[in-house]
Image 1 (spheres, rainbow, N blue to C red):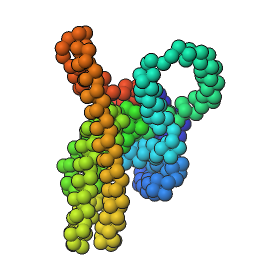
Image 2 (image 1 turned 180 degrees about the vertical axis):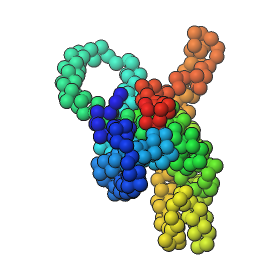
Image 3 (image 1 turned 60 degrees about the vertical axis):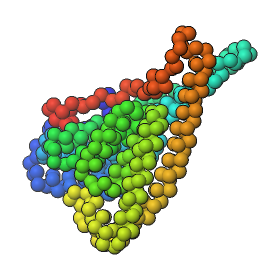
Image 4 (image 1 turned 45 degrees about the vertical axis):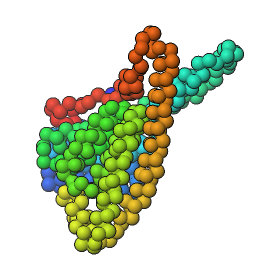
Length: 364
């Protein structure tokens, strides 16, 4: 699909019609718009960020061309701004993920109610009438949802274009990891968990090479992987990655508490490429310590919840095995059902059409 908003195309028509007569001036304006757009994201003003980053991208594409590495950051941040706005409004992706969760709950309830009495049939007419009323109420939302999804498709394409550029350039591994992480988050909220896990695992593989082993970004990605795995009914893997994230946080806390010198060294080593040094590294270390300690408590609560879910899941599998054993197995045979042979629970979605890097990263 193509985004409806002409001001929100992958790159502006200006890139085809306006010659860069004054490339230097345009570069200055692009850099200013980009910096202001990033600041607007940090301030939570996504509408302003979207307009500023769209302008920055238009100018950069005009000066450097669609495939230029100079455009990659603008593609990425512009896509992020669109994505963050949708998250703030709880639209499109959140609805689809919730619908997927509701569908699983409905299926479970229907399975448990397989012996329901015939009296339920009397309620069918009322249910159908209710369904018609709900359908009418939904009609008013369809058009807005379609427009929102157009913007979300654009957000995905922008970030994917940035990924393609960074991947081809091969000199910006952290930026490439950022793209994979954001694509993973998008796919998770879109209930496309298989793709989400693929993206997040790519991100993790890069970070494990580029960052120190106790860097909290690695723990953050492990948590995102754990969430996607839980949503995809891979509970044991979700627990394993949550536990690993906890171990990384605990190692980081220990390092930050070892000494002031060790703390300063740790935060300086974690600076992103090209980032200015901390004005007060010790204060930055103390702030990071407070943040990680706060997050660690939540992670441990999540770990206990996952342990409970894994235990329940194993109990359910054991009950199924016993039930099949009592009736002699499937089809009268003697074998027990293989717990791993059940439906994988993988969610299939239409997703988005991947852009192809042909004439340029903006080509979809």
